[in-house]
Length: 105
Image (cartoon, helix red, strand yellow):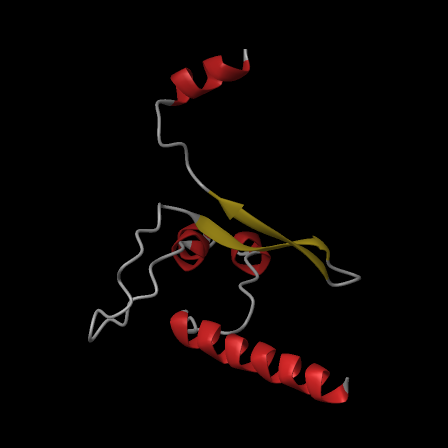
């Protein structure tokens, strides 16, 4: 039974390494907290930092096989005293806004 569990653990670890190699790390491994930029009025900076891009290596252009639609992601502070944040991932509408709104009416 212990051998079986050890084998599963090794398989999981190998899978994790394989997945992490398939999706290279972003330039920053720290969470992107946008609230300080917004509070200082640096909206353009917040927008640029939160834009989700491809994970291509800029020098070799490797890893460019996935097309990512325009989107923005980051954390917004919801309770500064307790240090609580909420994650968002925003995808702008890809159709005319008036047409999209008619779907809900």
